[in-house]
Length: 205
Image (cartoon, rainbow, N blue to C red; front, side, top):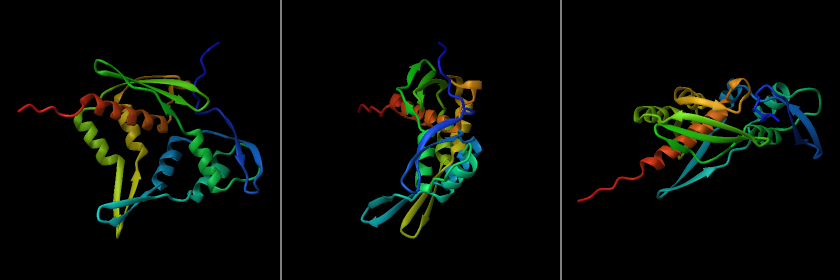
């Protein structure tokens, strides 16, 4: 029996709770990179500055555009619409992944990723240089200050570009197509592994 591959073109059946409270199976497709990049631009992390060095992160309500993304764009077939709260849950669920421990082999790093449905994928990359890491940190997150709060947004395309630059091989994908949300997850795992490998400085006087 051949190993199952993650296929961005495969239809996905998922249970959804409708606004009337009932539960119904609906069929959606996986979002394209462009759709995920645009959605990423809309998601903001808002941090309130409460004074005396105290900060509080404010949970944002789901964007109504998520309901449009599910009902008008990703939805396959007819059926009742879902609201933005259920649409948010569905998008988060189908684009989620879990990461295994990164393994170093000389200048290469192997990063395992498990996609929804338990599909196993593996990514082999080189480590980013200090300059590449600096450039990524500068471009990935954008912070704007507004009175007593900071608004942060993230650029999925920046993570995708770094992944493409560092990638050696990727297995577990139909057509060798790695979605940008997986690229972002792998890059974050890789950068965490890099920081752990570098460790903290040991200074002897």
